[in-house]
Image 1 (tube, rainbow over the protein chains, first blue to last red):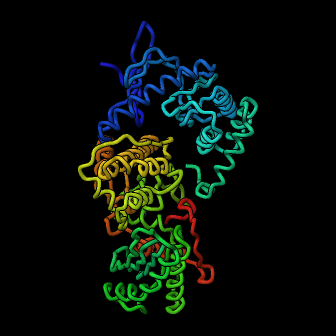
Image 2 (cartoon, rainbow over the protein chains, first blue to last red):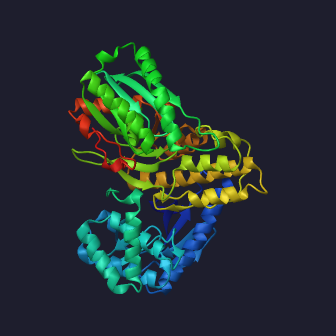
Image 3 (cartoon, each protein chain N blue to C red):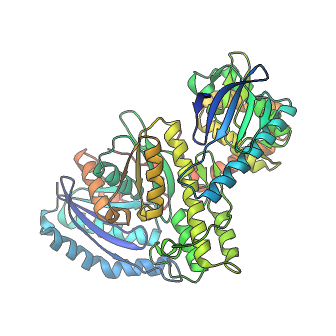
Length: 196
Length: 324
């Protein structure tokens, strides 16, 4: 029996040992509310894509967990010890580091797709980006801007400004991305969306 | 406080009367969408023609005289401008003639609050799904409360998508249930599935579905468009539930009447040990009672507007509306 480490909306994460190392197994559980065909295609496609994107992100030099093995609906990966950013008080330094990590990903043509404090781990010194489940290879400024927008909605103004300025310093096409972000926020529907 | 509510944001002109949260009347007349959809001028004309008779019916049903009404509420928005104007005019005229307070109400707050309070939920994750709106919301904390939008559609509302497809497939989209009926016994076809965090998008699914009309059975496309779009809503909702550590779900809005969506959401609630509550179908469809219901609470809390300041706002965002 594997030890359950945590449970998210679409996957259960188990703690295990593999080749003498601590690993996490992220298993996408079936969802009984979805019809079987749709459920399987989502789980298999996302597992495959997540593994591929996590490896790609690792190769880009971003701090992400190393993938050890992949099954049809499970990914075996390095266990990073630390706390989720959503569970601690975020410092400006941490926000800057997060901005740099996002810049590294975007510079390599990777968008994260669910870039929030719930998907950043910190050990107090470094920050790591996790969960590439909704990640895509993309060079579209719209997609990059949405990564920034998701993080912006979860941060105070001061933290976001530290995050965004670090992102701007490190990202190749930051000007284009930031102006796209403004355009998205100006679309009527989203002008006044408040922060939860 | 005997309160009369006027709703006219889209195809329905409705008048409801409540007293102490109890619904005494909920009368309406509905413009038939047909194959042309809603043409703003025509829907507004329909509302003008029907407003007096709906008002009379509501008063008769409640068994009260107009002179006994203590307060007026009306839908300020969001909705179609010309339609909102009809309800606003009726409400202002009544308030002026009767010399009683008037309060503008957000349409979405009407759906949500009547659903939340009638199903006895305290602080639920709300799924508000209708023709024009598709949002996942939760009440803010603190004294001055409003609903925070946790996730929403990037483009069109889910009901709008289902009606649009029905029209494209040559079906008659009579207020939304057409696709549900046509989906019976269908088989699953792969469809584009777009969820980003707790947000989602429906236009890609709509375009793809319309392209499938040639070469596939309408029944299979209807089945697949429903399964796919509802699964998207369910995924976003399940994420919201877990992220916010909530154990209550409230479902409201016109599309909340769909039995397949209800069944899927019940499974999520069951799997997470969460309580799930729905507004009665009468209040999921657009209606005046929900506006009266919320309006009464606001008036009792001392909130009202000068008649001259009463306006409409086509894009009245739900997170800008106060909740009492």
